[in-house]
Length: 280
Image (cartoon, rainbow, N blue to C red; front, side, top):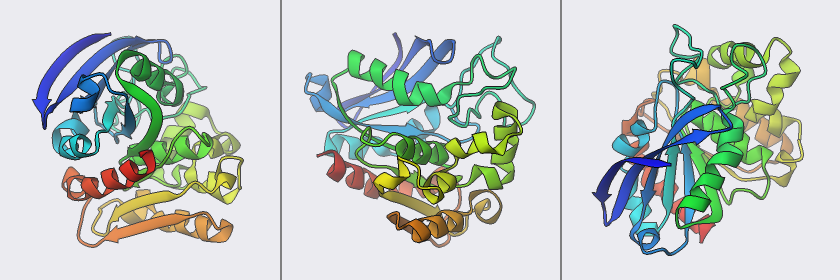
């Protein structure tokens, strides 16, 4: 690994690292906030944050104001890039496919299959890198925004026991039923919609998969003024699936808030306290 940024923040260190990833077959970057205790070598729990379409590792670490709360609770925060990048990595003219739009799936369709394996990267490789290279314990939680909220919910539901808690801001809860998801899942996985279900939070809950049957509590924060609410996000679908199966869901609709980081920054403190309680 190579550290490419370091900034003192709230008594800790906000850093950016790059490393060779076997999961995606290329270089990946991730942001990591190390609270003071971690800098002293004390093992700290970790919150993994998955960002949304068009984002890099920078958006969350520069806009959300999470460092203050991470320092307060003694939590390491890790925010990876949203996809592999580089000249040999396939891309698309649109913002919602290709570089910056990995959707946290393991692609099986060409030309994406070689590099677009963000599910394996988030679930397996990145935690192994973090826990080997920093004072990080194996107590993990996960959160994210929009496409990253989709990723956080799916990863938590499919991996019972691996995470202590999960939350999501403005998540794409049913990618099989909205334009962003249909475009990406078709490109990455093909036309067989059965294969899409493993990456769809609504399907995981509704079909009572092994992971969903654990009844892992879901915390979802949604802006009522979000411009993508009715077309791409559709939290009511997740609410209906959870009500049908008895899956615990705390859905908060915040009137007037949009899809931006102004929304995330307004409530990230509450989410950090929620995860801190689970990670204690």
